Image (cartoon, rainbow, N blue to C red; front, side):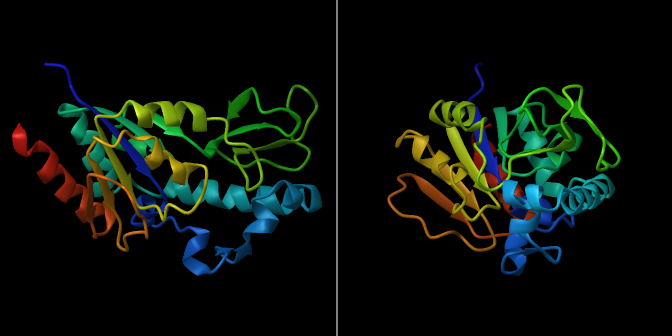
Length: 230
């Protein structure tokens, strides 16, 4: 039997229950930092050492965090569906939970690249320091998509959404574009589910089921609904 394609868009809400906060929790401050200082090309040009220190801390936070029941539940759905995760998150909790297919829209905290070129990227587990150089002579920086930078993976993500048999959104406010527009790529006939503690204000989405719960309990409810036919 051919498995249905289950495409899941995840945001900060799924990792928040693993202790990883988002700047949207605190009125534009991310762990006490103004995002324009640490997550923009302008911030990088102004104070690269501050940006590196910030992401070095984030990298340690992610390394210390553990996948939660929502991450694990999505991995378990691979028994029943062809699951593709599209995540806005820079952590690796989906991979550590066992998900086989994960597309990172906004980059990955455990990768770095030259500030002169988008490719190639390199694995990094510890800290990046000012003065650490890439082979092309550029300063190494986190391989993260900052505000104001292009999102190279949005095209592949849109194609996945357009080809979905079931589409799920978990833990995202659907206000950060272009990621928020992915739900509009899904065919009207495809069942759609949104899981969040507070369901975003969305309109004209046919076939939408809302699950107003935190990600951990919401994924358990999603599993109950999706595998009822098995």
